[in-house]
Image (cartoon, rainbow, N blue to C red; front, side, top):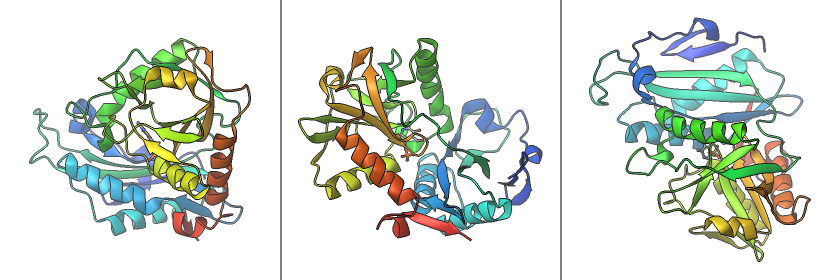
Length: 302
Ligand SMILES: Cc1ncc(COP(=O)(O)O)c(C=O)c1O
């Protein structure tokens, strides 16, 4: 894939550099878009898109929540497949579809404003180092409450919240931030869901903790239950993390990345724990076509 891949923009196919928007675009001014991140794994012969349909279903639903319209899910999937096919990458890739308000009016209202759709592709291997063990901090920035900006909508404007937390973490020498919600309970990372292991049980904040309802989170729960690991979705207290045997993050970007410290407290022993290792391995097997899940989870682009 060269440096200026083909992209999709409002019905047209053009080089990415030619896909531009006016400076007074609603979405640019007010953050009125919603998006997805989809990985494609190169298996040596073809790119396999992971959870393509699930991502497009989420985009379609979230657009509706934000009073936007997108093409039907089948059409969104077809655009994604063509994007990969026409660019013919021979590496791992990341697809970014986005629905957005493309009008140029001054009012921030969502109704009666036209919608745009874009989709582009980039080469992407690791977003985070999945091997080294991450050093996290609890952010001083609170997760946006659902009745302010819904995190589950994956709205572009909501990512200012993530940007602030992630930047603070980087400036203070951490790899990533953990948000607490307005009740002071653990929510998620800036772009990842969070799991901890306590007394053999895999625990993750429930869907009312202002999280994005992650597709990888769902896959992790499936893999854990299959491995006979009990899973609880419940409120998680900050200091429970300090007492956890294991903590890991998951998401399309970070995949499954284990955590070695939070707020400079060591988590578990110094090495990756057995649960996160097993989940990471099962996930990797699935995305590289080596497990019983692969056929269902992957869309091959030939
Ligand atoms: C805020 C946030 N939480 C969680 C996730 C993980 O979601 P998924 O597994 O669907 O990629 C993401 C992914 O982009 C995210 O932005």
